[in-house]
Image 1 (cartoon, helix red, strand yellow):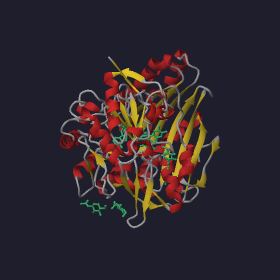
Image 2 (spheres, helix red, strand yellow):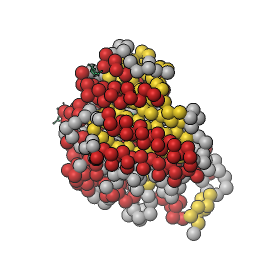
Image 3 (tube, protein in one colour):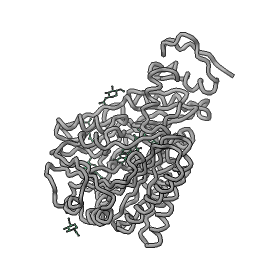
Image 4 (spheres, helix red, strand yellow):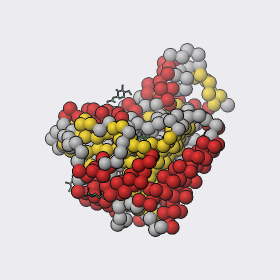
Length: 505
Ligand SMILES: Cc1cc2nc3c(=O)[nH]c(=O)nc-3n(C[C@H](O)[C@H](O)[C@H](O)COP(=O)(O)OP(=O)(O)OC[C@H]3O[C@@H](n4cnc5c(N)ncnc54)[C@H](O)[C@@H]3O)c2cc1C
Ligand SMILES: *[C@@H]1O[C@H](CO)[C@@H](O)[C@H](O)[C@H]1NC(C)=O
Ligand SMILES: *[C@@H]1O[C@H](CO)[C@@H](O)[C@H](O)[C@H]1NC(C)=O
Ligand SMILES: *[C@@H]1O[C@H](CO)[C@@H](O)[C@H](O)[C@H]1NC(C)=O
Ligand SMILES: *[C@@H]1O[C@H](CO)[C@@H](O)[C@H](O)[C@H]1NC(C)=O
C-alpha cells in the first residue's frame, strides 16, 4: 500500500511523493510537530549531503528520512515522536554524530529514521569553571580551532573530521591520554546545567548525568556507547594549550627491526614524559606497491626532539613533517584513506616486541594474498600500533572510572588496529576474510606466547567482535543494569538496532 503526500512546503517539490505507507508514516509523524522543517527526504540536495557526509562509503545507507535536530528539545521531541505506542514496533531509528564508524548501520539505517546530530556542533569555553561544552555533532577539528585562540584544549580525536559523540561514548584515545586518561574520562557532565538538561532517554525526557546526579548513568556512558539514550551535550575539563611539536615521520620497511623495540620502550617509559604520544603503523598502498612505516609523534609542549623520542628519532627516515604547530594543524594532517569498501578490526595484547613482529609478518602475508587475488586496483592495508600503558587506566580510576575495564590489567598493553580499504565491491569477501584471518592468527599467537589480552576497543571494532563483553563481566552487568534502569522499555536495544548493543553482547 502506498501513501502520496504533497511535500511542497518542505522540499520545493511540487509533485506529490508516493511511498509505502509503513515507511512514510514514521517520517510523516514529524509533520505535525515543530520538527517538520528539520526533516530531510530522499531526492533532495540536503538529504544527499547528509548521506554523503558519512566518512566511509559502506556507511552511506539511505534512510526513509533524516531528522536534523538543533537543540536537545528537538532531540527529545524526535525520540518521543518515534516512540509512541503505535510506532514502537514499526519505527526504527539510528543516532549519528560524526558518522565515522566504518561499518554500515552503526550510525545509519535503511527503512528507518536517522537522527543526525550534525547541526548541533557548537563549542563553548567557560572561563569561570574552566570547562568546555561541546555538542555531539561537532568535529574535533572545529573544536580545536575554536579553543586554540582561547589558549585551551580538551582531550579528543586525532583526525579533524572525526565526530565528538561517537569517540567519547566509546572511550576515546587521544594525544593526551598519558596525562588525562581516555576522552570519556575528561567528561564532567553529560549536561551543561542549562534548563534543557542533556541526556535524552527513550521516553523523551531530558536528564543530566554527572558525578552527583545520576552517577551510574554518568559512568556507564563512558564506554557504554548508545545503549542508554542520546547525549546532546558534553562538558569537558579544559587544560591549557601551550602549543605542540609533532608530525609524521616516514621510514623504509627495512627499519622494522628497530621500530618494534622503540615503540615497546616508549610505551614502558611514557610516564616519564606524559606530554608525549606515539603511533606506529605499517602502511601498504597498491598505488606505491610497497609498505612504508610511519611514526606519528606528538609532544604537547612546544619543545623539539624531547628525549623520550630519542630511539624513534634515531631510526633512518625517508621524510618528516615534524614541526612546532597547533593541534588542529596536526589533526588536519592525520585523516585516513577511504575506498568504496572499508574494514576496521582490532586486538589488544601485551607490550611485547614479538607481537609487533608477528603482526608485521601477517601484514606482509595478507598483502601477498591480496595481490594474488584482488580484482580492484586501488587498495590499502594498514596495521597501527598504539601504546596502552597502565598509566591511562590509572587516570581513568582517578577521574571517577569508566566502563572499559582496563584497570583490571596490571601490565602495559598495545592497541592494534587493522584498517583495510579497497575500491570495488567485488573484493568485499576477500578483504573481509584477510582482515579476520590476520586478527585471528595474531590472537592465536598471542595466546601461545602468553601475550594475549581480552580487551576489544569499541571504536575500532568490527561487528563480528564483541567489545562490550571484553569490558569484563562486572562492567557488562553494570551496563545491562543501567540500560534497564534508564530505558526499561528497551527502546535503545530494539528500536535503535545500530552499534554495539548490550542485549547482544
Ligand atoms: C579518520 C578517523 C580518525 C579516528 N581517530 C580516532 C582517535 O584519534 N581516537 C579514537 O579513539 N578513535 C578514533 N577513530 C575511531 C572513532 O572513535 C569512531 O569512528 C567513532 O565512532 C567516531 O565517532 P563519530 O561521532 O564520528 O561516529 P558515529 O559513527 O556518528 O557514531 C558512533 C556510534 O556512537 C553512537 N552515537 C554517536 N553519537 C551519539 C550520541 N550523541 N548519543 C548516543 N549515541 C551516539 C552512534 O549511534 C554509533 O553507534 C577514528 C576514526 C576515523 C575514521
Ligand atoms: C556546524 O554545521 C554547519 C552546517 O551543518 C556548518 O555550516 C558550520 O560551519 C558548522 N560549525 C562548526 C563550528 O563546525
Ligand atoms: C561551567 O559554567 C557554565 C557557565 O556558567 C555552566 O553552564 C556549566 O554547567 C558549568 N560546568 C560545570 C561542569 O560545572
Ligand atoms: C565530582 O566532580 C567534581 C569536579 O567536577 C570533583 O571536584 C568532585 O570531587 C567529584 N566528586 C566525586 C564524589 O567524585
Ligand atoms: C628506553 O627509553 C628510556 C627512556 O626514554 C631510555 O632512557 C632508554 O635509553 C631507552 N632504551 C633504549 C634501548 O634505547
